[in-house]
Image (cartoon, rainbow, N blue to C red; front, side, top):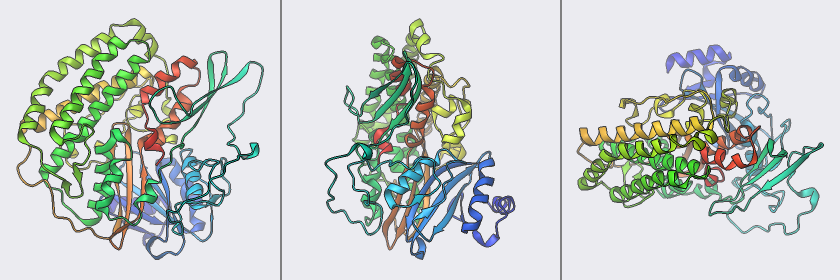
Length: 523
């Protein structure tokens, strides 16, 4: 880390005093206003933007501080740039980092800070019904009822990008869908059946998760983290707990980390199985999909047997686990996993032997490699497009640095590649769990006594969908600011590009190949 600090100071032409080491591979840099633009331009050449967020009254500063979190390409320390603001205005960096656009719109909604030169100033999570002066992340706002607008005038409606020309027409889909899923609006611009533009609008069920956390103890916030996205319970709970454990210097017992790893990989297995089943369903092959659904259901039952919850809730805790896992349940899981690879192979063989499955999956929904970094696309979507990123390897947490992990990277970036990457990762997860269970989960405690300290830190984990980030700021023993950015938040933007040149009936298939979380996007 010391070498990295020296390199950063030299590369960005900063003073040593403005750079300080954070917790566990984090670096914090204070930026003056006159340094900001030049520094951001330099960063755009070698660093990836992973998040932008705002904190009010941070560390004694009476006002707003913008945080820009980066990771360097080829080196995996996380650098967080702090920029104090003296007003409700800031400079946009979306021209340098396209992924910043949503973050800036989110900060404008939450805090009322205007990014004066932003190319897109539309609302993001506060839709038209909210009053214009409503900014719920301000400290002055308390959870009192607000009066929403009942009559929305045409000029107040959300403006989608408009395309006109001979033969061009729009297909609006959603926000209410023909299934038990959350709302999201998809506006297609098409000529015939060929799509040449898609614009996504989310945030129809904003829950105020980050505001809900304010003023709670870290212990009270674990269920909040678990509820961010129902099928990423273990990943989000672990990311939150990792951040708090870093702040407080808590050493999680080895047995607890081994069991956490089992839970995280089980979550990856059942999530990927659901995605693969959905892809096969959406090419009208329910017989082939049924095998993947059966395997997913069996994994969910194993989850219930070892934790008491099909979706691994109420088990991960700050300091380890809330309770131990019975040895009989672990033996039962090991016994089940012995039969699992053969069953998965049978399911895959049935899918791969179907010409119409291959025909629909290959060359469909290509995410080009050049888009991965600007949009900060992560997880299987990135690896299927030729980018070897995996937080478990790049930023190892827990015991992952001791596991024989590999990155499954394919180049074409289509639905077929995403299907194949997920299949390979399932087998890796099975092997990880098998190795842990066969070698024996270490005996001992599963919970370290905790005394939460004040401070701030990042928890970054690899969820089934990709990199998930939780930043926690504890002041006077309570959560003062909690920022969450799931993989879905970034990866939704990939669909807008993947769909171009495809036909309308391919959209469900492309969508399912990423299977992103609405709830995990709209906090």
